[in-house]
Image (cartoon, rainbow, N blue to C red; front, side, top):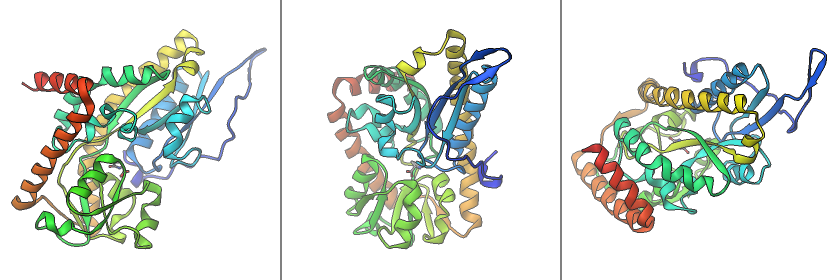
Length: 333
Ligand code: PCA
């Protein structure tokens, strides 16, 4: 199911806190968790996370009640990770590559053409998951699950014949990789969060963007753009993290329910993402966006840029990066 075609789930602006539920004659404290997420209710990631919360609630008979606050409504994307780390909220979602400034291994999924199919993205995830989870564990954060966005492409207002067509465009970006690729094409990158995309275009702050068919459809890209180049650069992942402190306060059965629901959410999310790629491309076309593959000339430039960025990343990511690449190449052979 995509939320795009269904009624929006609207959450009330719930206050943060723990409420006491009285069950029968014994007063028992049900744990309530507020969970900030950066993307809107139409986004398949949000739909998947709400299902995760429902699964946990059901498996624990309401003992753990997770309220999802989507669209950056409780905490903005930039603050979600530190809010979980500081215990302001117990759990949250963010895009993994947002942590690239802490450690380049968090952006291994945003290196152009390193893994640009679902199959390769899955292999890369298997090769990188442990190192990434360990890195988070050092900050008392537990990685619960990660789900990729559909492959990233480029939205513009004219067909892209060659890389030169991107020169001087003001290009909306969301992580260091999307910034860097814009720079390498001579465009000017500007960081804009998804909820701010429509305003950024309507006020003329940006005139092109790098993102997925999913986010283009969710933000109604056809209102301000005409072309989508399905360049399939990379599949960046969102991850759900929980603070180890909050997790360790749960009893064993509840911990298990969370881990089981997380494993299911990961499997389901990858499936939803694949399906979303086809669905969202169709939505773009239905609404008049011209969808095309890169021309041979543009494809060649993209490959070159990908090679440059792979080298740059490997240089930054040191031994940990080399370990991931080695495991990835070995699994692909
Ligand atoms: N949507 C998010 C991240 C990648 C994607 O497809 C965004 O555009 O910010």
